[in-house]
Amino acid sequence: MPNSDMSVGEVSKRTGVAISALHFYETRGLIKSTRNTGNHRRYSRTVLRKISVIKAAQQAGISLTEIAEQLAAIPNNDKVTSTAWETLSSSWKVSLDEKIERLTLLRDTLSYCIGCGCLSEKYCSLINPDDQLASKGTGARLLDPKEADTIREIKARYAAEQD
Ligand code: FES
Image (tube, rainbow, N blue to C red):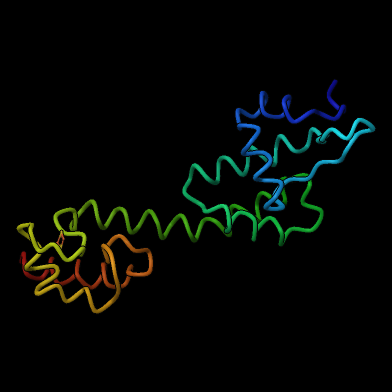
C-alpha cells in the first residue's frame, strides 16, 4: 500500500535502521510520527526517503548534529524533495570536500606523524619538532579538522625539504 502509514517496526525493516535509532532520530527532531487510536507511532511513507538521506549522510561522515541543522533549515522537510536534496548536498559538499582534502593530505604526506605528542616516529622531528603542535591544543592535532591550514603548511614545508 504505497500511501499507507507505517509502524516503527515496518520502517525499521524497510530502512535497515534499528528501532532504537529511529526513536533517537525522533527525539532529535529528525523525523516525526503521529499516534493512532491505540497510541502507537505511525510514520508517513515519505519518512523512508528522509531516513535514507540521513543514513547516507551519516555514512559519508556528516554528524547527526549537522544533518539536523541542515534539515531544520528546509521548510516542510517531512519529505526530502529533489530541490531539498540539492540544498542539502551542496551544503554538505563543502564539509565533505574538506574531509576528503584532509584525509588525502594525511594519506599522502603525514601518515608517519599525527601530531599526538609521542615523538616516536621517524618523521615526528620534521613534522612536530619538540611537540610544537601541543601549543594548538590537546590530542592528535593533525587529525583535527580545525587544523587543515596547519596540515597544508606542513605539507608545503615537507615538500620543500624533499627538494
Ligand atoms: S606520531 Fe605522535 S607526535 Fe608524531
